[in-house]
Amino acid sequence: MPDARPRTPDEALVHAVYQDHGRALLAYATRLTGDRGAAEDVVQETLIRVWRHPDALANGRGSTRGWLLTVARNIITDRIRARASRPQEVPEAPDAPPVERDHADRVATSVTVLAALEELSEDHRGVLDQIYFQGRSLGEAASALGIPPGTVKSRSYYALRALRQHLTSRDPAGDEVPA
Image (tube, rainbow, N blue to C red; front, top):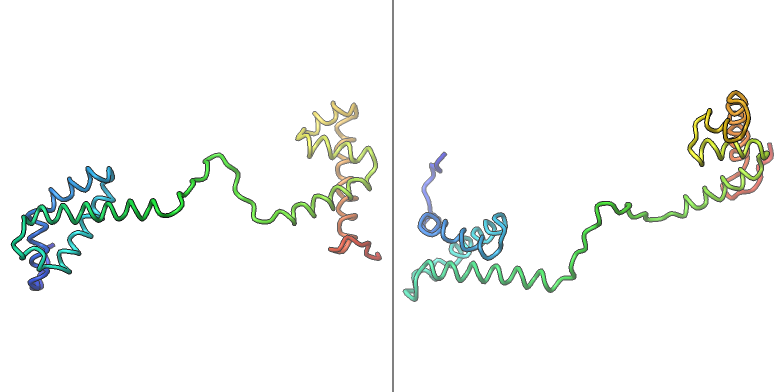
């Protein structure tokens, strides 16, 4: 949809320059940058400079297209220099685990859980080890321990209950709380 409002002389100049030289300018910027999106940004910046300095085109020195291509090349050079002056960004590897900010809570929880596990009987600890740490099913844990699956199920129930009681009977500082 064409713009219905009248253009100022500067806007008309920018529009005329784009109509006459926009395709060549875009092709040149694309060739220098190797990126169509970046090239479009360069063309836009070049046209903004035409709008800000319309007298540069009317000074009679050289061709308009030559001036535009020089401005585009200077913009690209400035961007390359600016990028080179900053430290290079290192992308995260796609398979890298996310960076953990503070793992102190996890360490404290692990220490607390390990201490609570030590309070359990050997039978209860063995069942929890098979099911939760080894990742075995009830049947696999029963085979590994040499006991019936029903026994594994009941021991895991009572082991988790004892573990929960042990963990809730301590305050955050790790001291025993009177029951």
